[in-house]
Amino acid sequence: MSLSTASYLARRAAQRERVRILYRRALKDTLNWAVHRHLFYSDADALREKFEVNRNVEDIELIDRMIDAGEASYNKWRHPDPYIVPWAPGGTKFCRNPTPPSGVNDRKLIA
Image (spheres, rainbow, N blue to C red):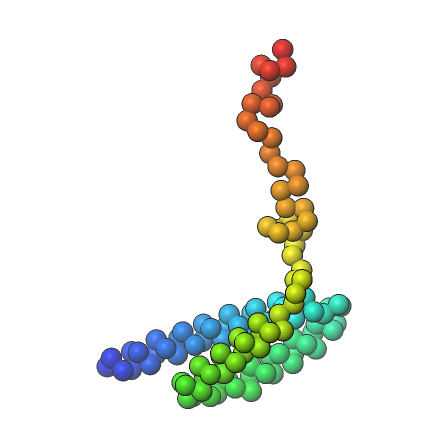
């Protein structure tokens, strides 16, 4: 395998990874915008169609430009207040009941 072939394959792998990450982030953000799950399904199908239309593009420079445009569009339309699971970091219940400091539960102090 020549160096140009190896660099081409490495660049294509990096592009695939960027597209995969962009699709997952956009799909999760679509769920933030949908009020009900049945509305999410149609939006998710439309998002998938946007990605599938360009699946067979082979020009590396064009793919890079399309990924950059997709990331810019995602950042522009990202939800301002995304849903956070309550017990996850940033959620409303995260660290609500922290563990007590050491020594508070010692029976020797209650004598």
